[in-house]
Amino acid sequence: APPLTCNAILSDTCSNEVTELADIDWENLGFGLLPTDYMYTMKCGRDGNFSKSELRRFGNIELSPSAGVLNYGQGLFEGLKAYRKRDGNILLFRPEENALRMRMGAERMCMPAPTVEQFVEAVKATVLANRRWIPPTGKGSLYIRPLLMGSGAVLGLAPSPEYTFLIYVSPVGNYFKEGVAPIHLVVERELHRATPGGTGGVKTIGNYAAVLKAQSAAKVKGFSDVLYLDCVHKQYLEEVSSCNIFVVKDNVISTPSIKGTILPGITRKSIIDVARSEGFQVEERLVAVEELLDADEVFCTGTAVVVSPVGSITYRDRRVTYVEGVFGVVAEQLYSVLTRLQMGLIDDKMNWTVEL
Ligand code: COI
Image (cartoon, rainbow, N blue to C red):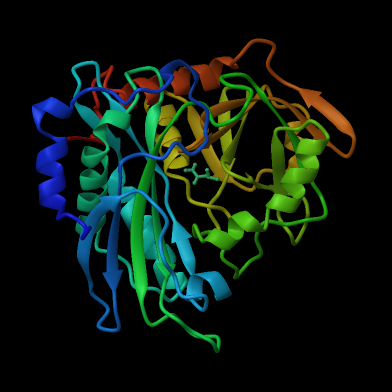
């Protein structure tokens, strides 16, 4: 059957009859793909303009075996979330920020990108079409995964002649299998995630393939994930495979500054603003690995992980432990403010949420 237009699907899914929640176990959401009803696609040809947007049933896509994304990794992704408020309305968290980050990344990867408006409208349409998959308040969120890929055929190394912007969604709960419990990190000293002048600062798909080897080795040893050091001095903290890192000492919060090798996390940036508005001093600077040894608290931030307390970090076979309970006090306070704002449980003084 030909794909339906966005409007036809939206008028169907937004009609009052389809407000029932999907029939899944909302109590035990983790972070795995649960296929939903619809995905969104939009294409861009040689003229550089994105058009032909459509919502269609979630499913496999067809690509040329010589698509740029498959052969040369010309691809970017984003991650953001939608929350169901207690009154049933839906909140998106800072979608324009994801749109802008995708545009920055597209410039680095020689790709055209949707405008901010196209991106945000596409996210809204995808979320509304899949609204029955948004978890009840407090049970999780709808994770939104926009992709931008070189979908045209190439053989010699060159930018793809055609691009596809695609969005799919999945209901999610906690990212780490630990749930809302401290994670255990190991500092990686041999393998690096990013290099100066490379692509560490943009959300290109290859950055994530590059960390799988160290991450898998760490998991075999019982760690939750890997903390990367800078590749020049092997001395300064960069980030964890899937999130940014913060270190707390004497109520001062420090995080590695954005300098091209670190992903500019939207949760990272939001937590810095929340912390400052809560009266904390926040420093974005070089953070030496030795600072982990006498930190009061360490925590990670990311769209998927939200705010994750770190229970221990192992560096050169030395294990430093932090929190006894679930959260350290600082991480707990920041987590609480951020998540209540995202779920619409407190006033959004920052003007970060977008209500659908
Ligand atoms: C996110 O936090 O949204 C990410 O993109 C990280 C990913 C590895 C799950």
